[in-house]
Every structure is written in C-alpha cells, then in structure tokens.
Image (cartoon, rainbow, N blue to C red; front, top):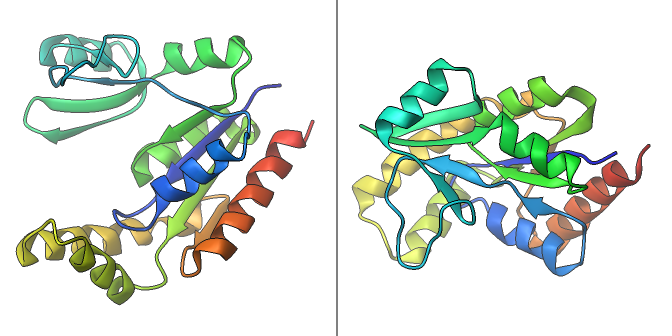
Length: 188
C-alpha cells in the first residue's frame, strides 16, 4: 500500500535539508503537486510544479471541498493540496511527500489516518532558530522576528504529529528521519 508522509516545520528548521537527504538516499518518495493562485514563475508548468488556478477558481474548489488543506498566505494568494491529486499519485503507486504548514499537516493526517505519517521538524530552540535565520543574511530584523513569532506558534502544534525530530545535530536528525520514514514505508 502506498503512503503519505507529511513534513511540517517552522522556517529555518532544516526541513528541506532533511527531505532532500531522504530523496538522495533513494527512498521511494514523490512530492505532491500543490495548487496555487499565483502566476507561474520562469519555466514552471501547470501540472508539473503546481496547478495554477485563478483566485476565483481556487475559491470555487474550496467551496466544493476539493482541498485536503489550503491557506490564503496573502490576499488572493492561495496554496493548497487537492484530494484528487494526492489520491491519483497514491493510486499510481507513489508514496507521497507533503510539505505543508502545521495545520495543513494535521488535516492531511486526519484524512489519511494510519496511511499517513506526520513528521514535525523542530529546531532545538527559538534562540537557535534566530541564529540560523540571522546567519542567512537575507532578511531584516523585523522579518526575522515575525518568523520567530510564527515559529513559536507552530511549535505549539508539535505534539499533534506522529513524530518530532529535533534538528540540533544534522547527522543525527538525518539518521533518525531515515529510520522513521523507511520503517513506516516498510510496514504492511
């Protein structure tokens, strides 16, 4: 049986690094293709990187109950996971990765139940997260503080996930994520 793995984490926790590690190790995982109301960037194509919908079409799909989860990030800028898309990938024999916010992760877990493993990647502390974000040198102090405030909020949901991986030592976190995910995928 194919399965769903949900990854959620505050920005700067190392989620992308850990997911990429799994993919480099050859774990049979495929990203879900999300929907968005933003226009394509560069060479992005409809149905490959995203399903590109107008804000009106996105709202219609919300009203029809087509989404497992969605969020309006900015006015008229939606992102979400379509039930039909995820089910199509599962039926095609793919184990699917969903990289979503915490509320979206909880929603997807509720929908798929035991067929879904929800993983929360957590920084060792808010202060460690501050150091990581400042070290990137890409954001203003105000933007960093907004991310830290959001991270504290997101971390309050961690106990609703199947497993929490604290990313304070990358090699240890990689070993743990590999073991947790491969064990789940190998279960009947």
